[in-house]
Amino acid sequence: MAVELKTDEDFKTTITENEKVVVKYYADWCGSCRLFAPKFRRLSNDERFSNVTFLDVNAEKSPEARKLAGVTNLPFFATFKSGELVNGVATSKEDAVVEMINEL
Image 1 (cartoon, rainbow, N blue to C red):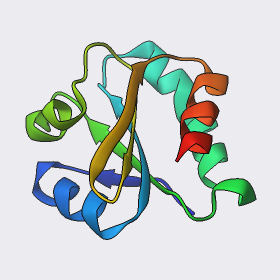
Image 2 (image 1 turned 60 degrees about the vertical axis):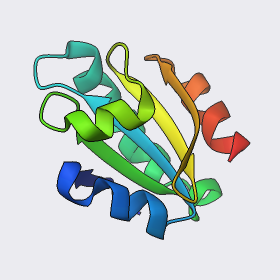
Image 3 (image 1 turned 120 degrees about the vertical axis):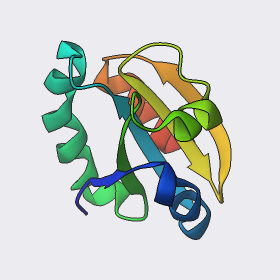
C-alpha cells in the first residue's frame, strides 16, 4: 500500500475510517524526515502490515493533526486504532516504528 499524504482537512476522517493507521509527521526542512521517507515507504509495502494505513502529514501545515498526536519533535510517528491515539514517539529508528505498528 502506498503512503498517503494527508492534511487537517482529511486527517480525522482517514484515521476514523481505517482501523489501523500509522502516521509520519515531517517538515520540509527536516533532514532526518527525508532520510526516513524511503524506509517508511518500504514498511508500507511490507506484507506484514497490509492491514495498516500509512500516512504522511506535514506537521507545519497541519496543526490540528499535529495536536491530535502531541507531536514534540520531528520526525514523529503516531499510531491510531479506530481513530484513537495508541502511541506516539519522536524517533528516526526503524525498529521503534515497526514495534509501534506491531502493537496495533
